[in-house]
Amino acid sequence: MVRKEYVITEISAAPDGGPYVLITLVEPKDLKGPAQPRPSHNIVMGFTSMEDLIKDLQRALSGLSRQMIGGTLTVIKLDMREYEESGLKVGDKICLEITKIEKEGV
Image 1: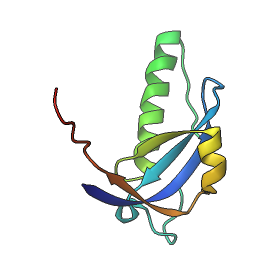
Image 2: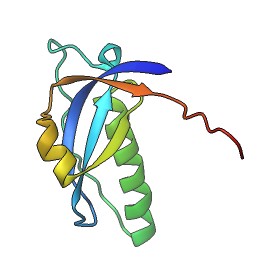
Image 3: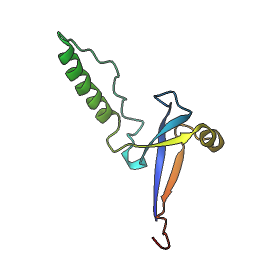
Image 4: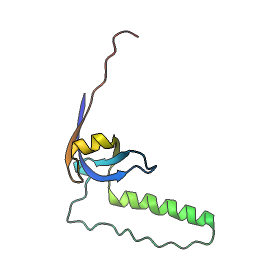
């Protein structure tokens, strides 16, 4: 069994419009302190072709995610019923427990 503590940093709707939400978790040690300024989300890019746009956009997005949080993100998916019953909100500390299910027989 593994137990890990996390802090909820984002709750977002399903990108495909499905009946679920995505909850982004970060280990407390990976959170940046409140004294540090948040990175600016204003990104200005110039491009002359569609290939340049795609390359620059990928580079900007990967740089932005590294600036926002120094550690690894964990994302879990909850259906709407689970989410509504949980009462979870951004900033809540949670604990995830992972247990291996032992099967008898094959």
